Amino acid sequence: SAVISQKPSRDICQRGTSLTIQCQVDSQVTMMFWYRQQPGQSLTLIATANQGSEATYESGFVIDKFPISRPNLTFSTLTVSNMSPEDSSIYLCSCLGEWDEQFFGPGTRLTVL
Amino acid sequence: KNEVEQSPQNLTAQEGEFITINCSYSVGISALHWLQQHPGGGIVSLFMLSSGKKKHGRLIATINIQEKHSSLHITASHPRDSAVYICAVKGMDSNYQLIWGAGTKLIIKP
Image (tube, rainbow over the protein chains, first blue to last red):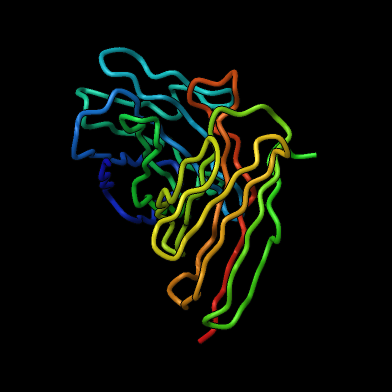
């Protein structure tokens, strides 16, 4: 199994600012993902974080708004840029285990005022 | 119609009761996940199934591929089981993308 930690666990931010969320996995993994869960909604995949290359974004998400870094096989960051209240969500980091099990971090609860 | 449907949406039960949460899907799948989300937001993967039945402690998950249906059972339920239980499937044509159910909010009263 993989254990994922995220920082910060929660934050309250002002409109127009940016927040970087860190995701650390306790083992090397090939696939890492970033999800968003808006209030009362299911999870939505933002992007796949690729090590050594640009992230692969899903429809509706762009790099300028959600830049992602993946410097190695255990770490990734997601930045939520130029935030607005609509960005208030839980952001979750995830990875695939050796047998395609999906592991999730504890989430970062973001509130934008 | 959603590709993954869960029932019930909400479930309140007394401690000790046997709980069943259902998941039906309309696409061909390579795997089905059951996950648990606590109020703080973190998600725990409970099971990944492609056939048959799996058991872990008081939790049992079953899947019927022909009927495109899975169930999650909790025996001897306890207030700490209160959470949202989510079913998600990986489609046959998908590398990693999961199709998510809306979740079932379970409350177990002492």
